[in-house]
View 1 (cartoon, rainbow, N blue to C red):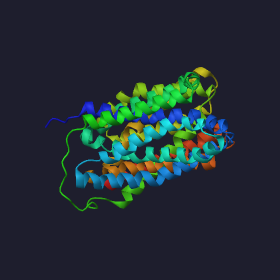
View 2: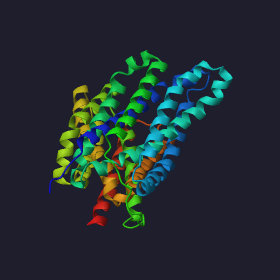
View 3: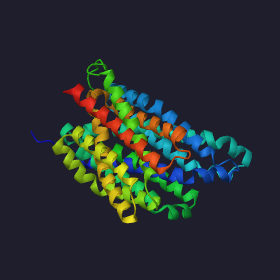
View 4: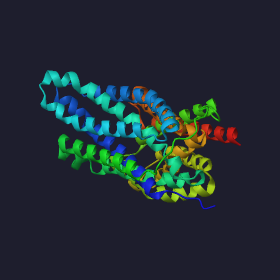
Length: 377
């Protein structure tokens, strides 16, 4: 039997991943200036991000599960994907325009608008990314996911390398660009998605193991915390090192997907998590810029194995009929990890402490992936 990958659809899904990443890059670059432009305290930015991630922790699994029900009854997840994608793109376009309102009105409506946008972003990600399980057979999932990693990492690298240029565009142009890319990616994905048919209505809990959901959620949380601590651990010049990290992830994404297909996804993830844990310790010993770049490249290549494996890992622990719930649990765990980092780990955290905590987070993630191997074999 020929194992097929629907590459056109995979690339369309990758563009969606890139659009999501780019929108968040633009948003975080302008968030503080939006607040201060209305005379509000810039420190509110962290509170807003904390609340947004808290909402995503709950919304991602719930919407993912609801999209499973929609798929089962209507034969498609696209009501969620289109509603969330179109809604998020329109709200994103509105965000900078609020500065043109009287200050009292703008101050009253800015934060609700920001939260509404973040909520819309949480509505369509899990249903969309769960489609990867339909576009690629299980053994080819990491290879297909590598395309998503490639495009998402390039978008993140743009946010780092081109930050001065993006800021020079101004909020109106930047948010219009982000809105247009997000809307275009949503409509393109809908256009290339193969025709669907409603399946037989079955018991949605058949084959679903609750402990597997805990493993998915916990792994997403641990990887999220570890990644943020990794960024905090990068040596100076940190912006250049962060750019090197994302570019390395992009360059190594496709080879990492090929390795994961040969080794098995869980083994590839465990290898990546182990090397990243060791790399974080090496970062504390960096004595020169050259050594810093070398360690950053090593960590970035290992991160490719983990990012490629994330969605296949989640999909592999749930039955196909619960793909949305599986991806939603992983993204929900990632959002909780971001909340924990913003709420407890960001202030006054030295690079050395961050590296040790990050190593612990990646080892926890590795332990959870190892447990998943034991429960599925």
